[in-house]
Length: 90
Image (tube, rainbow, N blue to C red; front, side, top):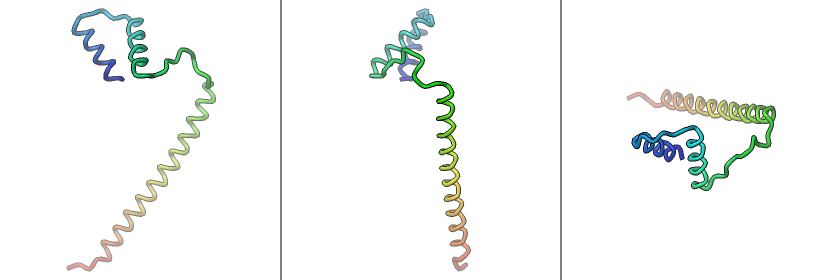
């Protein structure tokens, strides 16, 4: 969608067609609808506080998952190093 929006902007610039903010908003809405997206016409249903709380919880889950991945990678590296040390030198 971004590509479509930028292609449109490039065409308008090449044609030297003046575009105002209202035109850009209308064009973006058209592109979104063309791609089957629903337009958000209101501020939403979730409060700022709830959004912050949810994003904080999800980030904590992400950090835990990343630590697990890092530990697994470290263990694999250690195992590989041990294997290398156990191989007889020729």
